[in-house]
Image (cartoon, rainbow, N blue to C red; front, side, top):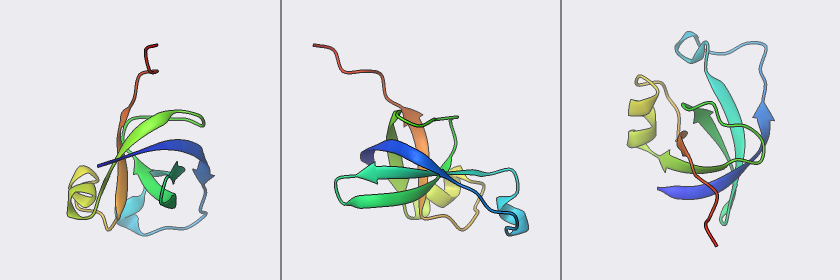
Length: 78
């Protein structure tokens, strides 16, 4: 799992049928930007939890994705 911040979205006019209805977000991580399938309704500026690899595709009904947003993190307490 990785923590990142949503910086934007990716839009497409055509996509594979297994990806219909799926929203894709650009998430900034310490390793660089990642495009992730959104499973929780995250938006720009949200800190999120990402899963990658096989786990990500399971969250997306076996769709061919490499990363999925699975949680929106609460603000840090000070």
